[in-house]
Image 1 (cartoon, one colour):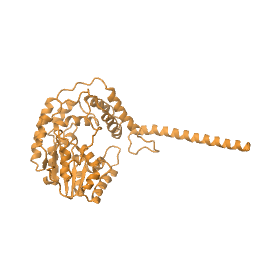
Image 2 (cartoon, helix red, strand yellow):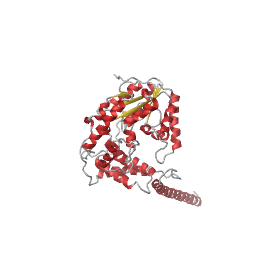
Image 3 (tube, rainbow, N blue to C red):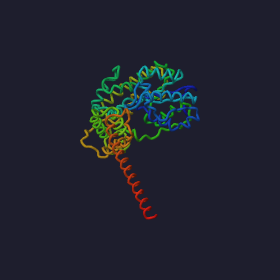
Image 4 (cartoon, rainbow, N blue to C red):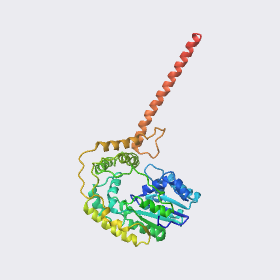
Length: 406
């Protein structure tokens, strides 16, 4: 029996993440359960499990490279209109993008959704986020080696703007500041913090079921084989590729299409080598992360927000990742290299030889389009010539039959 008190009817629940705290799992669970949700008066609008670029357009004032911000801003307002038209008992929007919202973006989201908006923040121990976030950053931008990155980031935990090294890390993961910010925006009575325990796979879905007034077991996060952690060797290979493509002619649009959503996804979709070394975190970094977690737990507890779960988990050494020093990578795993290549090829073949390239395409995509277009025009010409030859042959046959009296 779920003992979480449900939100009042008429509430719009906005799950703001942050990243790596179960957002993808819950978005998938909500998406898969939409018919059942509707039967219980809950609406999760949209055409995707995560309408990321729509949220980015409004909350951040930008979208992924190569995307049309005006179109996605309109898309977000369409999601809100869909909620209003359906008049559910409870509406739900979920995007980890909201955790990084600008002041203007946060005000827009709250003003449009109205005074019955309730903000849900999911938090995990920082010590469990370090490795996965280093890997994630390394798929997008050049980053220092893991040990060096840890030193720089952990030294900047108290920097007001998140620090100079991957500054979004602390903007996302100073969970205490995140909670305090949204409590300041909507009031403590309209913020709920869910502490995620990775050992309890039903804990997070059960908390959402309780908030939404749903039967136990209705929300079931799908298995996500495309978002697995990389081995240390895979992460090193991926970052070497990112380092090579972080300069001209590659642009952010090309990088997003071919590297972030191509190479990285190909690598994650492939089964890892069971004998490969997992990412190890040095003991000094674990100690510092647990210390930071304890301080955050104290401030979250003092914020006045409702807390579901045990804030003590944020500094629980039992949840620390594998400790140790990583062995330098000296050879490329052929399987990992093949998976990476397959991911890129899948995106190359997806560039369509339409008459004009996409307006927002980067130079690499335009070069691929140009080659695809040349091949398409060649085959169009060949087909036309074949058609002309067949027409001529039929005409010759017709004339021959006439001469022979046929």
